Each structure stands twice: as structure tokens, then as C-alpha cells.
Length: 584
Image (tube, rainbow, N blue to C red):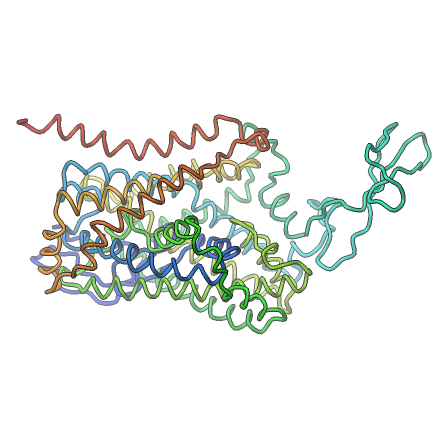
């Protein structure tokens, strides 16, 4: 067994290595890239994406979402979470070596999850670069996304609550086709100089926060689509470089460098979440937002999509299949009580997601009242929630600079914790499988992060958001579901669920009961398969007739090639193993 220390962990107490070589460390763990993660006694159980995924799921289902969410947590999430912790702690190795020992024919699953974690690093740290850019911009008395008089603003920019004034569009020798007179929305008037102008009263306005995000941070307005990425935005590139430097100097030598960092990144987000909760519930309109959050929409309960969404949220928040749980658990003491870890961590995960909903919907209720819009129209999907809607709300509060600083510091530390976990999954797995990498950890980590940074630069261009969307959609979507499906099949039907129970009994003195066995053997593979089928049935490509100018037909092809490149590792490694194994 390897005697190396846990480079990604917060050291709470160290035990004597078992047999002179055990990785005896108990810690507060980082989470994987989409939330979740850990194998120690405590962890940070949510990532950046939980902050914007949770409200979007609640927008139509509201409180009814908790019912399928809890059922999926009990029958699928916790059993799979516990399974990976048990495998990692018993084998004391990363994902590749673990699966090579358990079921050699399925060693490709280990390679697949490492490949997925590697792909996720390409774009996940770009989110941190955006957060850092916003954090730096917050150190000013007048936040830059509060006004319309900046160089990046357009004439359609209107502050919240500002009266919409009509605009005139000059159209030489042109008659507006649907001009309907003075009582309608549009009509033509003669302004002289042989030109016709059109008065438009029903035009679409944008807010300062929207234009700051799109025109200044991303500058996506300077790109016509993914086939025209434009120039590199060097402010984002430098922020991305800073993020990778933080990651490198936190992970390059192990616990001696990462311990102090993780103390801060693991605890600070909870402090800020609590502060934002107190502030949020005191805002005017917060009660309406919270009531919207808790009021169930039972009509949605019978829709299959609700259950699929609940399973997906649980799956990606707890994080099995990213290799992070195996990596973290491999550093535990052999007889560490992983059963308690799994139960406590899952409870923390669920409670944190639930409480974060109060933080978010209290502010959304405030914004809905301030703008006069329904709450469901205030919620933005994806990064727009944390980089447009929430900053917009913070800017209207007294002491807006303070609130913006702590919010984006929370996003940054939250993301760093998750990034540490995803990177460590790759580092641990490859170092255990190829010891020469572990012996040259500093060089290996530098090469890994240099590669990630160079690829990430594509997301720092003016059209980089289009690259980001491809990576986000295809890097760890269906492929991670395939990985965990085969994990459950390999353990249940090849390695043997009873054999794994014996391994668990050897570690903690007792084995799980019928509930856990049946969940891993039947229910978990079943609901993963259901998610996969539903995903393919409801598949909507990025490239459609409406988006073809931004996403040509080949964008989805590239995405599927990336997804298949990781999924194909399972049959490729299995074929290699069969050909190399003597006999029939």
C-alpha cells in the first residue's frame, strides 16, 4: 500500500499507518466539480452549479420537488455514495487501480472517470476565472454593473425601475411594414432630411448587469458564433492563470501545502451562506420568494421528467462517478467508519442545498417585487443566475460593495474546493497506476494544469462562451451516467455484492443490510438507465435552425465525439485485457 499523505485534504488528525503503509488521514474534504465529494468526516457538499441548478429545477415544480428528491436520495444517492467510499477505502488506491483490482475487465471504468474529470477541468476553472474577475471588479464604491453610462453599454440599457423611453431607429427611405398608427406600438414619422424614422415603444430593454456580463466580461457581442472566436480576453486569461496557480500551489506537495488552504475554502462558503441567508430573509419581498420556493405544485408529480431531474440533481451533487470519492476514501484509515461518513455527508449535502434555496429565493422574491415581474421570470438558467440576477440584486442593497465582495469570494472558494477535488481525482488515479508520476508529483501536476490552462484559454476568447457551453453539456453528462451504471453492474453482478459486504465488515465491523444491497443491485442501475433513456429521448442539440448561426452542425458532433472518447475506454480496455489474458 502507498504511504503517501493526502495532498488534497484538511488534516484533522493523523493515525499510525496500518501495516506501515496505510494512508491514515481524516479530513474535511473538497467536493467534486458538480458538488459532492469526500470520504472524510466532513465535507463541502455543494459546488457552484448547485447554486444555479437548484432554483431552475424549483421554478416549475416548487416544493413538490422535495418528494422525488428525497426518494432518489435514499434509494440511489446514498447507496452509490457509500459504495464508492467503501471501494476506495478498502483498496487504498485511485479509480484506475481500484477497478483493475476489483473487476479487471472493467478497469476501463477507472480510465473513463479520470478522463471525465480531466475534461471537466477544461471548463470548470473558467467559472472560477469569471468569479475572480467579478470579485476584483467589486472593490469599488460604484459597482460597474449598476449604470448604463459605460463604454460597453448600448442604447437599450435601462436601470431597474427606470422608465422606458422610446427610441428612434433611422431607416433611410424605408416604410415600417407593420405601422398601425398612433394608438399602436410602432408607427412611422417624418423627421426631415429625406429619412423616415420609426418610433418603437415595445422594444426589448436590457439591464446594466446583463450588458456587463455579455458585453464586458464575455464580450460575446463581438463574436458571430463558435466559428469566429475573436480575440483572447486577457483579463479573463490572467484570472484563469491565477486560479491555476492557486490550484497548483495548493496541490503540488500534498498536505503540507493544501491543509491551510482547505481550512479556508471549506469553511468560508458556509459562513457567507449563513450571512446571505440572514440578509435575504430581511429583504422586502423575501417572504413571497420563500413561499414560492416551498409551495408544492403537485400537478407535476406524475411527470417522469420531475423524477429524472431529481435523480440527476442527487447524482451530480453527491458526486459518484467522478473518481473523487475513491481518491479521498483511499486516504482514510482502514477501519474509518465510512457508513457514518456517508450518512452525515449526505445529510449535510441535502440540508445545504435546501438552505441555499432559501438564500436564493428570498433574493429572487425581492427582485420580483422590485421589478414587478413574476418570480419564475426572474430566475435565469445557468451562469446567468449568479453572474446577472444575483449581482443585480446585490447592487440594489445598501452596502452593495460589501455584499458583492463576500458573494463572489464565496463563489470563488466554493469553486476552488471543488476544483481541488476534481484535480486530485486525476492526480491520485494516475499516480497510483503509474508510480513514476507520483514520484515526480510537482512536474506531473504542473504539466496537468498547464494543459488545462491552454485548453481553457479557448473559453477566454470573445466567443469562448460557445466553447464553454459545448464542454459543459458534453464533458460529463451522459458519459458520467454510463460510468456509474457500469460501476453498479460490475460490483453487483461480477465482483459480487456479498463479497463487497464482507470487505465492508472487515473494515467497520458490520455490513449493510438488504436495503443497501437491493438499492445498489437493482434500483440504482434502474434509475440511472431511466435517466439515460430520458436524456436521449429529450435530447436537444445546441445546433438548431434558430441557433445555426452561433452553433454550426458540427458543434454537436464535436461534443458527442468528446463524450464517446471517454465512454469508449470501457470496451477498449476490456478488449485489451481479453487479448492479453492467456487461455480462453
